[in-house]
Amino acid sequence: MDIGSISRTYDGRVALRFERAFPHSPERVWSVLTDPECLRQWFPAKVEIALQPGAELEFRTTEEQIRRFGLPEGHTTTGTVLTVQPGRVLEYLWDSDVLHWELTPDGSGGCWLTLTHTTDDEEDALAHGAGWHAGFEVVEAQLEGRPIDWSPWERAAELAAHYQHEAG
Image (cartoon, rainbow, N blue to C red; front, side, top):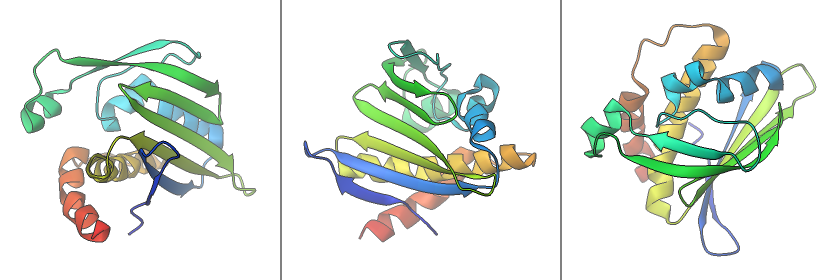
């Protein structure tokens, strides 16, 4: 199981990096990363991403976040879109975290998706890792047209122990 990699940035933050191969074009994968309907099924907050640098983002709690983590109903955090290169790069702030999504053609019609999530500490990175892993499983199902008959939240909970174990 590929759990991604964790490294330190020049300023001491923690960067969690995932790479996944998809047999779909960068444009097709881009649509799943940015379409509000697709995002609702796998992204860990309610957000609509405006695809223009400088756009303000509002991340609203989901019912699962309220139930699982005790976040207050109506809780929001903010962010800003930093970079948009359609079909290639999307980068934005979520509070102080940076999410950098990059799509690279693989030469056979598919692409590599790389997510680098930069946060303040390693425990946060590990917690996010299980969630992104589960989310990528939903993205894969969406791209393949398979029904999503599982909870990405439950899947992330299953993966969390594995992430903690792998981290040592």
